[in-house]
Image 1 (cartoon, rainbow, N blue to C red):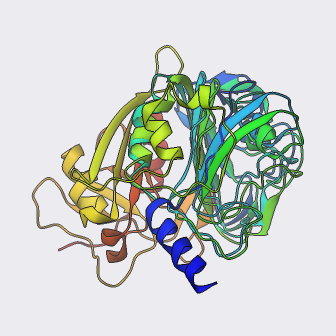
Image 2 (image 1 turned 135 degrees about the horizontal axis):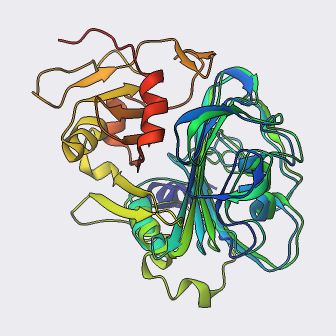
Length: 493
């Protein structure tokens, strides 16, 4: 037993992630109601809320998410996830999450999801969400927390750089190869290019942002509802009992596994893919009926879905490679894997042993015009502080950070033009309040510009010694919505 534990510890030190691969059905981000494709979507769910507000192209304003996140129909992220959680045939997918669904004690460090064909890359903060291959739901326990969900519709060519970045972080991944593999509108009834759900602490819905992103809208259903909302639809191929499923997944709290902790909440399905990044631990649980962790309703969470092309999977995999993800489930056919070298390395447990120990990958969503996305990743060997050393330096801008923080990392105004400003708590997301104490999200914007970033690690000194990933979306409407939220910052010296 001791020998086995040592081997397991060694394995976890190398690969910390689970991945699922999805190759068909919905693979684009969805409108607020899930009724049509969009290029990107951002949902901010305040703590205690079940819906939140969503931003979609053009992103001029937030709109209220049309359904609770647990609903199994009628909203953007449900529709985007339908091939992940549903019982469709011929599924192939991989997924990663920093709290994989149904697994106690497993922690990864990212909530990104990256499907691979006309892919939707979904980045979110909801641990253990969604659960693949079972009925869609949203973790009831995560309604209390604030969450952010981002969906980017990308091309298949973008998957490899994403995989390369993910090799730097500890994660759980889901890859879905059939059924819904695109981001969904609020009610899950149509594809969208991206979707962002912000669920405030104590709420079951929150607000959804989908293209064009001019305003947040109320999420149409509770996140644990089995129909009628965006993320349920997006996860349907992961959580459903469909035949012929092929997937791999990573998550920082893997589903159905006791005592295993990985460090990422990213999901990456692979057919008209939807990359989903979120903060909800243990969500979703694969191969069972969809639900949302009831314990997470108290927290604020962020769920992001990006619809991408299959070509984008390889760059996504390249990003993941930096993080040495732990693969706890993989049934993606070799024929699917062998054409993507970075994805193959991620799935085989390879790790970055030589410099460089950080990476930047560029992908784009699937819409025309597409939305540019930058992925920053680092391994624990880099010893970099991701907010200042990587993101602020690369953007060459002062940044405003919303994140739980320790007592060591402070606001920093020492470097001209590259200050680190901390957003004051509480914040207001489409009239819904969220405070740091209950908000699980980490995000930032530059002081001026058109970029929004979600980060899988809090603004704390500990992340210098951990793998980390940031997904940065360049779209003025999304930036404008979060700039309003981040209007007030703490004093800085």
